[in-house]
Length: 441
Ligand code: 5AD
Ligand code: SF4
Image (cartoon, rainbow, N blue to C red):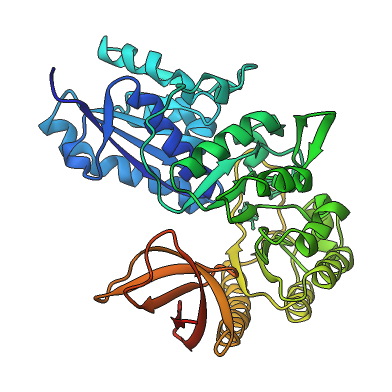
């Protein structure tokens, strides 16, 4: 038999893309590809792209340019663009970049084997449909039962019907779809059988999950409860959520389900009601804070994470100060903040009342200073506490292991007893800028 063909995948953007890249590797595995982490060795290169902000999309074109010499050296090399830029700009990519042989959107990667055949027959292939069939049903069965690391992602819900006025996701990922409970239970069991101890449930609106289960539609809380019944699965997380879908049973799960980790990413975007209305968020600063209060009543040590956009069209200095006030009121342990970026096809992109670039940059710097102070304070507050750590891999120093605490902080421990996949109580002894250090308790 000839050598297997080699596949190089580069993943941008969110965790769902990480999951999708794994699944694309499995699909192409059935067509005889093995993955490589060197683009120079590849027979096929796939860029799994992100369209959420302008910079993310521009990176794709500059990256493609860098593959030119590889294609010159190996005319049989196939280059594909997958993910959300593919979905949004597929035809344009084909026109703009003759290097590209293949464009595949996030909902059609189960069709990759047929597309790959088209390329081998000398053609180019574009598929950015939103097919009726479920791509997850068409992925190869009897996947390679390779052992896995201790943590994994599992997509339970995809797409979004919220239509925040700045956001491309409803257009690139399509309408909200929840996968059926039985499939997810089987996939989770398979992951656990392969060594996984922590699963992060993924969805653009994961807390809107309403998949078909025994007796009707199940909520995310009910799914989490069922998953918690899997022996050997020790930790469950989910991301990312919309405040309006934060239902009572899910809030209660933080109090009642010990396998659900005390960390929640709950984006608010802005602290100004005027801006939230223009963003079409359908909640207010007050209603968000009310949810946070209820979550903290259920789980006082919950570590909160969020997303923020500054410089949304029409944002005044007073609106921005409302965002700072909300951040002070909530207190985040982790956060992501962005300058508004107009995305073609979204309602906000039509607005003319742009915030000047220097004002937006200044606000971003001020917000990030506040958020990073909070982040640092939350991390420093762990010193002296004993937390549970799931060890994942060796650290950079000899004998060192790195893992994640229940609160998702990276923790370093130097101890021969610590091994990947092990969950141990660790007493935190020091806080560095991006990680904690501790010793087995
Ligand atoms: N401009 C800036 N940030 C954006 N996000 C989404 N769309 C935009 C945009 N057009 C941010 C939001 C979202 C996160 C994933 O990306 O904060 O929660
Ligand atoms: Fe985008 Fe809003 Fe949907 Fe999140 S909830 S994916 S920000 S439209």
